[in-house]
Length: 87
Image 1 (cartoon, helix red, strand yellow):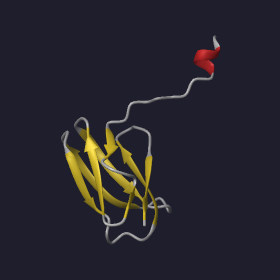
Image 2 (cartoon, helix red, strand yellow; image 1 turned 30 degrees about the horizontal axis):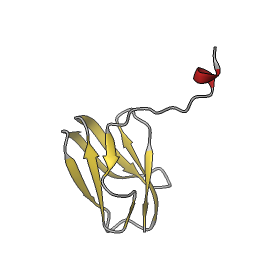
Image 3 (tube, helix red, strand yellow; image 1 turned 45 degrees about the vertical axis):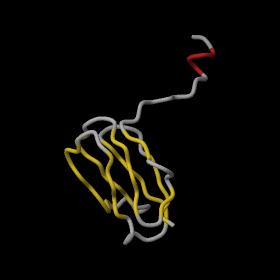
């Protein structure tokens, strides 16, 4: 093994990205790069606060106005979990 493969940073592919920032007050915008099967948003207690299935590649808008302030986690299919902050 060489240092390149033992100390490298994982740049794993993500099927979505934030449009703008991951800090939001009212609305969260996501850009889906491909069709996904499941999108779930969890609060810090691990409770599902939002879920949607079978979403095609497009830009989506998620209303987070009624969520409490704090950190939330987005899970799409089997990809790495990303977090966002509701202020």
